[in-house]
Length: 250
Ligand SMILES: [Zn+2]
Image (cartoon, rainbow, N blue to C red; front, side, top):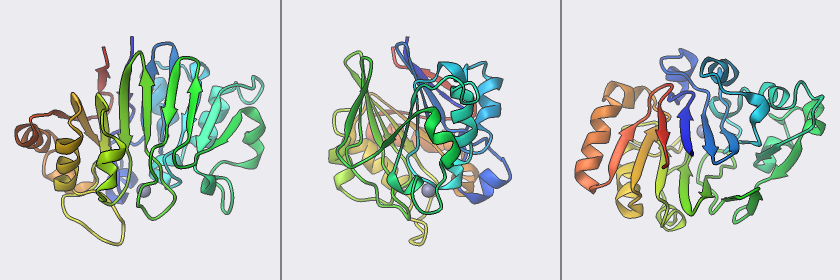
Protein backbone atom coordinates (compact mmCIF):
# COMPACT_ATOMS: atom_id res chain seq x y z
CA UNK A 1 0.00 0.00 0.00
CA UNK A 2 1.31 3.42 -0.96
CA UNK A 3 -0.09 6.86 -0.34
CA UNK A 4 0.31 10.32 1.09
CA UNK A 5 -1.07 11.95 4.24
CA UNK A 6 -1.09 15.72 4.38
CA UNK A 7 -0.10 16.77 7.90
CA UNK A 8 -0.85 20.33 6.89
CA UNK A 9 -2.09 22.16 3.82
CA UNK A 10 -1.25 25.76 4.72
CA UNK A 11 1.46 27.96 3.24
CA UNK A 12 2.53 31.57 3.29
CA UNK A 13 2.92 33.82 6.28
CA UNK A 14 -0.65 34.70 7.24
CA UNK A 15 -2.00 31.17 6.99
CA UNK A 16 0.92 29.46 8.74
CA UNK A 17 1.57 32.02 11.47
CA UNK A 18 -2.13 32.05 12.37
CA UNK A 19 -2.52 28.29 11.75
CA UNK A 20 -5.57 28.89 9.57
CA UNK A 21 -4.44 25.60 8.06
CA UNK A 22 -1.85 23.32 9.64
CA UNK A 23 1.68 23.29 8.22
CA UNK A 24 3.46 20.02 8.92
CA UNK A 25 4.26 18.93 5.35
CA UNK A 26 3.27 15.49 4.09
CA UNK A 27 4.05 11.88 4.96
CA UNK A 28 4.71 9.43 2.14
CA UNK A 29 4.26 5.72 2.62
CA UNK A 30 5.73 4.07 -0.48
CA UNK A 31 5.52 0.32 0.07
CA UNK A 32 7.41 -0.19 3.32
CA UNK A 33 9.41 3.06 3.00
CA UNK A 34 8.25 6.08 5.03
CA UNK A 35 9.36 9.59 4.10
CA UNK A 36 8.47 12.94 5.66
CA UNK A 37 8.64 15.88 3.26
CA UNK A 38 8.88 19.49 4.48
CA UNK A 39 8.15 19.29 8.23
CA UNK A 40 6.87 22.79 8.86
CA UNK A 41 5.58 24.13 12.21
CA UNK A 42 3.47 21.55 14.03
CA UNK A 43 4.71 18.54 12.09
CA UNK A 44 5.58 16.54 15.24
CA UNK A 45 2.14 17.24 16.71
CA UNK A 46 0.30 16.29 13.51
CA UNK A 47 2.37 13.11 13.04
CA UNK A 48 1.19 11.90 16.44
CA UNK A 49 -2.35 13.13 15.87
CA UNK A 50 -2.51 10.88 12.80
CA UNK A 51 -0.98 7.96 14.72
CA UNK A 52 2.09 7.86 12.47
CA UNK A 53 5.32 6.54 13.97
CA UNK A 54 8.37 8.81 13.61
CA UNK A 55 10.57 5.82 14.49
CA UNK A 56 9.40 4.20 11.22
CA UNK A 57 10.76 7.05 9.08
CA UNK A 58 13.46 6.20 6.54
CA UNK A 59 14.09 9.78 5.47
CA UNK A 60 13.17 13.39 6.06
CA UNK A 61 13.43 15.61 3.00
CA UNK A 62 13.48 19.41 2.87
CA UNK A 63 12.67 21.21 -0.36
CA UNK A 64 14.12 24.41 1.11
CA UNK A 65 14.97 26.22 4.31
CA UNK A 66 11.94 28.51 4.69
CA UNK A 67 10.37 28.09 8.11
CA UNK A 68 6.97 26.91 6.83
CA UNK A 69 8.85 23.91 5.36
CA UNK A 70 11.64 23.33 7.88
CA UNK A 71 10.60 24.45 11.37
CA UNK A 72 10.25 20.94 12.84
CA UNK A 73 13.24 19.34 11.08
CA UNK A 74 15.39 19.04 14.23
CA UNK A 75 12.66 17.66 16.49
CA UNK A 76 11.66 15.21 13.73
CA UNK A 77 15.28 14.02 13.41
CA UNK A 78 15.23 13.36 17.14
CA UNK A 79 11.87 11.59 16.85
CA UNK A 80 13.11 9.45 13.93
CA UNK A 81 16.20 8.38 15.88
CA UNK A 82 14.86 7.83 19.39
CA UNK A 83 16.36 11.07 20.64
CA UNK A 84 19.60 10.29 18.82
CA UNK A 85 20.17 6.92 20.51
CA UNK A 86 19.20 4.86 17.42
CA UNK A 87 21.19 6.25 14.51
CA UNK A 88 19.08 5.70 11.41
CA UNK A 89 17.46 7.18 8.35
CA UNK A 90 18.55 9.92 6.02
CA UNK A 91 18.14 13.69 6.17
CA UNK A 92 18.06 14.98 2.60
CA UNK A 93 18.36 18.74 2.28
CA UNK A 94 19.70 21.53 0.05
CA UNK A 95 23.27 22.53 0.99
CA UNK A 96 22.14 25.95 2.24
CA UNK A 97 20.22 24.21 5.05
CA UNK A 98 23.60 23.11 6.44
CA UNK A 99 25.96 26.02 5.91
CA UNK A 100 25.36 29.63 6.91
CA UNK A 101 22.60 30.04 9.47
CA UNK A 102 21.84 26.31 9.25
CA UNK A 103 18.31 25.02 9.84
CA UNK A 104 19.67 21.52 10.59
CA UNK A 105 21.42 21.96 13.93
CA UNK A 106 24.95 20.65 14.31
CA UNK A 107 24.16 18.48 17.30
CA UNK A 108 21.51 16.34 15.52
CA UNK A 109 23.63 15.66 12.42
CA UNK A 110 25.41 12.58 13.81
CA UNK A 111 22.01 10.95 14.50
CA UNK A 112 21.34 10.27 10.82
CA UNK A 113 22.99 10.22 7.40
CA UNK A 114 23.02 13.74 5.96
CA UNK A 115 22.61 13.95 2.18
CA UNK A 116 23.02 17.23 0.27
CA UNK A 117 20.71 17.65 -2.69
CA UNK A 118 22.22 18.61 -6.03
CA UNK A 119 20.31 19.26 -9.22
CA UNK A 120 19.94 15.98 -11.12
CA UNK A 121 20.87 13.82 -8.12
CA UNK A 122 19.33 10.34 -7.80
CA UNK A 123 19.29 8.22 -4.66
CA UNK A 124 17.58 5.01 -3.57
CA UNK A 125 16.04 3.90 -0.33
CA UNK A 126 15.58 0.13 -0.66
CA UNK A 127 13.32 -0.23 -3.74
CA UNK A 128 12.30 3.46 -3.87
CA UNK A 129 14.19 5.80 -6.23
CA UNK A 130 14.23 9.53 -5.56
CA UNK A 131 15.45 12.10 -8.06
CA UNK A 132 15.78 15.87 -7.83
CA UNK A 133 15.33 16.84 -11.47
CA UNK A 134 15.63 20.60 -11.39
CA UNK A 135 16.44 23.52 -9.12
CA UNK A 136 13.39 25.73 -8.60
CA UNK A 137 13.38 29.50 -8.93
CA UNK A 138 12.61 30.66 -5.40
CA UNK A 139 14.24 33.10 -2.97
CA UNK A 140 16.46 30.33 -1.49
CA UNK A 141 17.93 27.08 -2.85
CA UNK A 142 14.89 24.88 -3.56
CA UNK A 143 14.39 21.44 -5.12
CA UNK A 144 11.32 19.40 -5.97
CA UNK A 145 11.50 15.62 -6.14
CA UNK A 146 10.28 12.63 -8.10
CA UNK A 147 9.56 9.53 -6.04
CA UNK A 148 9.53 6.30 -8.05
CA UNK A 149 7.89 3.29 -6.43
CA UNK A 150 6.39 0.08 -7.77
CA UNK A 151 6.71 1.42 -11.37
CA UNK A 152 4.75 4.56 -10.53
CA UNK A 153 6.05 8.09 -10.14
CA UNK A 154 5.03 10.89 -7.80
CA UNK A 155 6.25 14.41 -8.52
CA UNK A 156 6.41 17.22 -5.96
CA UNK A 157 6.76 20.81 -7.12
CA UNK A 158 7.41 22.99 -4.06
CA UNK A 159 7.69 26.78 -3.89
CA UNK A 160 8.89 28.32 -7.14
CA UNK A 161 8.10 30.98 -9.63
CA UNK A 162 6.92 29.69 -12.98
CA UNK A 163 9.48 28.73 -15.59
CA UNK A 164 8.83 26.50 -18.59
CA UNK A 165 11.52 23.88 -17.87
CA UNK A 166 9.50 22.77 -14.84
CA UNK A 167 6.94 21.02 -17.05
CA UNK A 168 9.68 19.12 -18.89
CA UNK A 169 11.39 18.12 -15.64
CA UNK A 170 8.22 16.52 -14.25
CA UNK A 171 6.94 14.98 -17.50
CA UNK A 172 5.63 11.43 -17.10
CA UNK A 173 4.74 11.48 -13.40
CA UNK A 174 1.52 9.64 -12.46
CA UNK A 175 0.77 11.80 -9.43
CA UNK A 176 1.70 15.44 -8.88
CA UNK A 177 1.68 17.43 -5.63
CA UNK A 178 2.03 21.13 -6.29
CA UNK A 179 2.33 24.08 -3.91
CA UNK A 180 0.01 26.96 -4.78
CA UNK A 181 0.43 29.88 -2.41
CA UNK A 182 -1.19 32.64 -4.42
CA UNK A 183 -3.94 33.62 -6.84
CA UNK A 184 -1.88 36.51 -8.25
CA UNK A 185 1.87 36.95 -8.70
CA UNK A 186 4.03 38.91 -6.27
CA UNK A 187 7.52 39.04 -7.83
CA UNK A 188 9.20 39.56 -4.45
CA UNK A 189 8.29 36.13 -3.06
CA UNK A 190 8.57 33.97 -6.21
CA UNK A 191 5.57 31.65 -5.93
CA UNK A 192 3.31 29.95 -8.46
CA UNK A 193 -0.11 31.49 -8.89
CA UNK A 194 -3.16 29.36 -9.57
CA UNK A 195 -3.13 29.90 -13.34
CA UNK A 196 0.53 28.88 -13.57
CA UNK A 197 -0.20 25.77 -11.49
CA UNK A 198 -3.05 24.94 -13.88
CA UNK A 199 -0.73 25.41 -16.89
CA UNK A 200 1.82 23.03 -15.34
CA UNK A 201 -0.85 20.42 -14.56
CA UNK A 202 -2.21 20.76 -18.10
CA UNK A 203 1.16 20.16 -19.71
CA UNK A 204 2.48 17.50 -17.28
CA UNK A 205 -0.86 15.62 -17.41
CA UNK A 206 -0.55 13.36 -14.35
CA UNK A 207 -3.38 10.95 -13.53
CA UNK A 208 -4.10 12.94 -10.35
CA UNK A 209 -2.89 16.39 -9.30
CA UNK A 210 -3.09 17.54 -5.68
CA UNK A 211 -2.90 21.22 -4.79
CA UNK A 212 -1.53 22.16 -1.35
CA UNK A 213 0.38 24.83 0.65
CA UNK A 214 -2.36 27.40 0.31
CA UNK A 215 -1.82 31.04 1.16
CA UNK A 216 -4.60 33.40 2.21
CA UNK A 217 -5.55 34.37 -1.35
CA UNK A 218 -6.16 30.77 -2.33
CA UNK A 219 -8.05 29.95 0.89
CA UNK A 220 -10.37 32.90 0.24
CA UNK A 221 -10.93 31.70 -3.32
CA UNK A 222 -11.81 28.15 -2.07
CA UNK A 223 -9.14 25.58 -2.91
CA UNK A 224 -11.85 22.98 -3.70
CA UNK A 225 -13.47 25.31 -6.21
CA UNK A 226 -10.10 26.14 -7.79
CA UNK A 227 -9.28 22.43 -8.06
CA UNK A 228 -12.61 21.83 -9.80
CA UNK A 229 -11.91 24.65 -12.29
CA UNK A 230 -8.47 23.17 -13.04
CA UNK A 231 -10.00 19.70 -13.54
CA UNK A 232 -12.47 21.15 -16.06
CA UNK A 233 -9.82 23.17 -17.86
CA UNK A 234 -7.10 20.52 -18.09
CA UNK A 235 -9.03 17.24 -18.03
CA UNK A 236 -6.71 16.13 -15.19
CA UNK A 237 -8.42 15.01 -11.98
CA UNK A 238 -7.29 17.72 -9.55
CA UNK A 239 -8.04 17.81 -5.85
CA UNK A 240 -7.26 20.29 -3.08
CA UNK A 241 -5.50 18.97 0.02
CA UNK A 242 -6.88 19.64 3.45
CA UNK A 243 -5.29 18.95 6.81
CA UNK A 244 -5.22 15.20 7.35
CA UNK A 245 -6.21 14.23 3.79
CA UNK A 246 -4.90 10.83 2.74
CA UNK A 247 -4.68 9.85 -0.92
CA UNK A 248 -3.88 6.31 -2.03
CA UNK A 249 -1.45 5.73 -4.90
CA UNK A 250 -2.89 2.26 -5.59
ZN1 LIG B 1 9.39 29.15 0.39
